[in-house]
Length: 115
Image 1: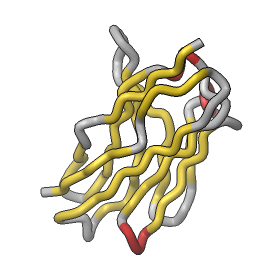
Image 2 (image 1 turned 180 degrees about the horizontal axis):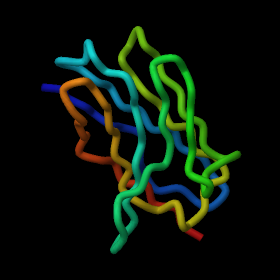
Image 3 (image 1 turned 90 degrees about the vertical axis):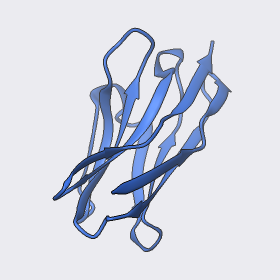
Image 4 (image 1 turned 30 degrees about the vertical axis):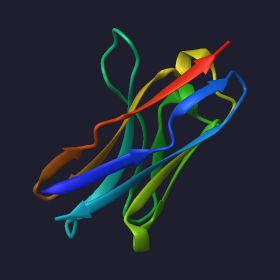
């Protein structure tokens, strides 16, 4: 099993910044990707950003240039730096890790951006 603990969410005004963190533990030896998903009220969960073991990253078009995903392999931690936040970024953000044994999810952290 893999355990994921997210932190860093909160309430911020439009234009502000937040940094999300997700610490992975457990059976992560075969982990090859770490991702952040966002789920806005009434909408499906969507990929926001991902990062592979080698460092390659991908982003949703809506966050390109504003969000940055990074990871600290020594700490088994993935970060999402969120800048220039917009009200439409309001969502529960979930950490996801992909391993050879399957995908695992954190419980999510709420991000609310006020206008």
